[in-house]
View (tube, rainbow, N blue to C red):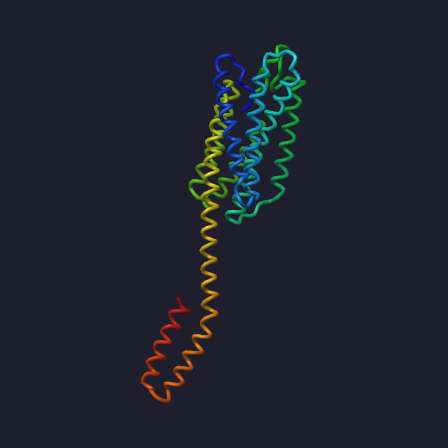
Length: 289
């Protein structure tokens, strides 16, 4: 989850993982930008993948400048941005979830929840920034190499409330959402717990793979749900148009039929009775179905 790409054994592998993930995230962001009807759900999903992409790119840039002693301030800036953007991505995921359930299923949420989480995001970002001077979570040594501080594991704990908030919103609306939504959303949240810990403890970038895979799956869910909603709206529109057309035609049809029955009553009462029976059957099938 953080700048742990600078180990000698995993540096090259981590760089490859991050570069591939960053490119795919950017492509996904462009694909979402081309979608019609940019709702709040899509806006926050784009925010989620955009901050993820930027977090990865800051790691990549830092990797390319590591070891250059003249770029220590630059490396430190990239470290701060990486932490802040990673936390921002989790906040973006929660905002996406809230608007997803609100727009898809008409659920109501307290706006204060999002505001409180945003305030908390600012607080932990200030904590990440403070490490530039305290070295508690990370530091950049005189050789311009990133290193864990004595409380490096706390960086994962600091985003824990954001992940819990995501998990709570999914569980509370479990029965209202589809199975595929529940599975994908839950898997993403759990992956942040598991892979975030592994990244912090063993200096890997595994969680970037999980992020891009699950981000693509969420993109598929959004696309499928949108298509289904559009198809349902089109079906409703066709039904409404047909009903409106039927209502326009029925008065003329009823008037003409009654006029025909009136004429038959004088010259052919038996046929008039048959026509009344057929007309009654038609009315019953038209208005009671």
